Image (cartoon, rainbow, N blue to C red):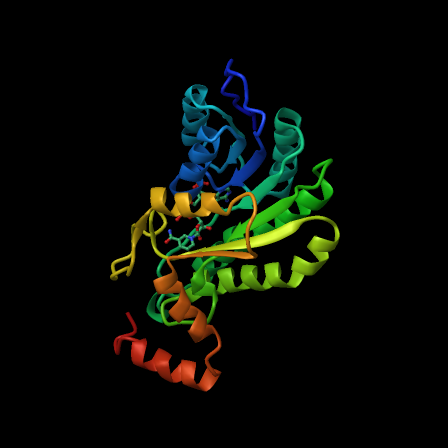
Length: 267
Ligand SMILES: NC(=O)c1ccc[n+]([C@@H]2O[C@H](COP(=O)([O-])OP(=O)(O)OC[C@H]3O[C@@H](n4cnc5c(N)ncnc54)[C@H](OP(=O)(O)O)[C@@H]3O)[C@@H](O)[C@H]2O)c1
């Protein structure tokens, strides 16, 4: 698919870095791209929906940095390879690649279906495995860092977590597993675990989402540690720290707790 440049004429600041965000047509990725460009950085944005990406690119004409739109379906390895070549051709070496694409649907057992679960696994996991391969083998210069947006729902299996929680658990384990080997070849592999953020992804949730924050707030928190920071960016602490304690609970205790949290009708 064709890339769209913002064709801006202003001079890019000397501190400018380059990033590629996959999953940037809405929500956290879109706001983050905007903030990065406003800070003077050059950002390639990808997702399936071309129009919001092109709007981001057009808006960046008034920003210190630059946004270029490279639409792609990240479940297609061939499209991902093509997009990587385009991104590098336009931006030059890419400092940071953020794998942020995902889909979600609430999935208690009563709504479990193989096709829906497989679709979630395909988008949430394959977009990242495709992206890691492309970062390692297609980009001429490997990125200095690769970040994956995971989710605290991947810390432990919880009622209602369904295939989404399982897909994010896979990504957390993948990142932990590859971290040292990536470091050895000069890549900092990191993850982001946000709490509940008000985006199209969570708009179908009918349950109370504690500490729900705006995409603006979430992107602002990510931005502070985007170019350099710990293995895991997580927020808000008052939500995530109790979940981290659950991560180390003995399984028997966790399963007893799950039983208490499961509605009797399974919905
Ligand atoms: N919102 C939350 O509460 C929350 C909490 C924890 C973690 N997260 C994670 O944060 C990340 C961003 O989510 P969000 O909340 O900002 O939701 P969002 O607005 O729905 O963003 C998801 C992005 O992924 C893209 N995408 C989906 N399928 C794709 C595909 N096959 N190829 C390329 N791009 C694809 C979407 O664009 P297209 O549909 O145009 O392709 C969209 O840009 C996700 O990884 C999500 O799991 C969110």
